[in-house]
Image 1: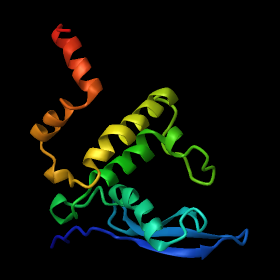
Image 2 (image 1 turned 90 degrees about the horizontal axis):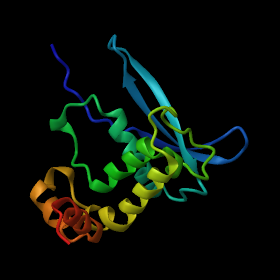
Image 3 (image 1 turned 120 degrees about the vertical axis):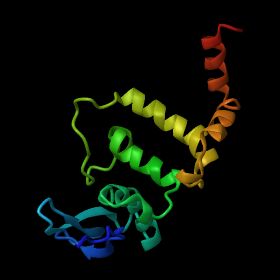
Length: 168
């Protein structure tokens, strides 16, 4: 009999570290290839970085995408663009995302990584244009026609379209 895939919420706790400081720790189980479950945990950040549990939970949202990537799509909760952008920042733009946070493990290897200037430029696009417009939209609700119409209103997109078409 097949078991239904579950969407894990994980567990978030404020724990005292060896050095005496308190930090938020996120815990979950990972199903191995052989079907056994393995306990995982990661430090999200200090209690100074995330003074409330709500702030720490928001920081963990992008990690939930990663730990649940094996889960069937039907059981997933709607994902907002903001959560997707957070996940993208962590995994595709680690140099910019983790800047100034030495306690957090930087993901990915150097080979194939975008240059720092590209990551910084993308971060600017995300902050200035993408998030202000799409932050609260769920992925399933965003349609290509909406995105095309919105792109016509973005100044750089209009200029690039004129260059491609050869008109001034």
